[in-house]
Amino acid sequence: MSGATPTSGAGQPPGTAPADPVAAKAARAAEAAGVAVAAEAPVPPPVALVSGGSRGIGRAAALRLAQDGYAISFCYRSDEEAARQLGKELAELGVGSLAQRLDISDGEAVREWVARTERELGPVGVAVASAGITRDKPMLMMSDQDWRAVVSTNLDGAAHVCRAVLFPMVKRKAGSIITLSSVSGVYGNPGQGNYSASKAGMVAMTRALAKEVGRYGIRANALAPGMIDTDMTGALSGSQRDRAVAAIPLGRFGTAEEVAEAVSFLASDKSAYITGSVLQIDGGIVL
Image 1 (cartoon, rainbow, N blue to C red):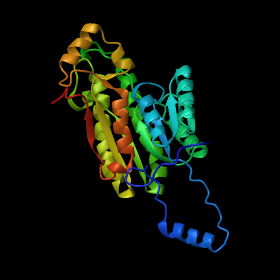
Image 2 (cartoon, helix red, strand yellow):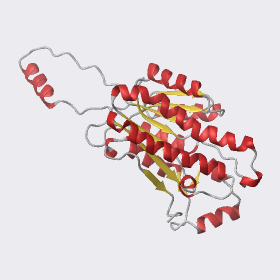
Image 3 (spheres, rainbow, N blue to C red):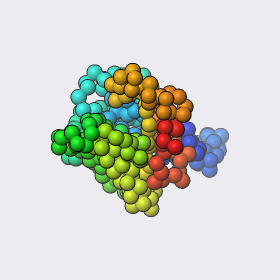
Image 4 (cartoon, rainbow, N blue to C red):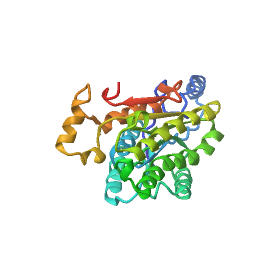
């Protein structure tokens, strides 16, 4: 497995350490004296785990974290071609990767995926819970199946990811967990009762988790994107999109890559004193 070695300093991924200047000085002195110095073993890249990684924000997050030097483990539900394409792009970036097909609402499958990731890639330092679906209808017309499908995928799935990575992170006393909520979960959105409930649950869960595991050196934060150009918003009609853009002070939809930049920030030591936060990335649509 190959991977770019992260740079040291404030922006390095969690779990990495800067070079020891004392050890480096001793090595130079030994070399000058003609004493053989054993070469240091290469440092394996840190590992990031991304649910829903084959498309949309999850895909953008996986690629951005790979640029930061992370090996990437991602899961997907059904699109084999999209998963293969992402694996190819990750290889081109010079990082190792692992793709797992699973149903994110299946807790046992998620636990097996995390265990496989730790065996094959190494300790998970960053977990991004981004798998999500919509089944939009007014509450009056919503079926039990529509409600359950959205809540089990979005909220239960995020909980499965968090619970699966927590025990090894607690043992190592390090880690960053990032959940992908939505402005719908912060303020509610008509016609999205199930989606809003699932995303609001993610916010509350993330804040509770931050209070539980902060003492172990683990941070938990949520992102709340607004209107982002993804498969989900691609289903909007032209008139629906025009009305949405008109309601956004910045006058446009955001991109998955812009959300991925926030993922990169929350994964890094640049956000070392940030936990329990909910960062809205919405162009000002909710002010």
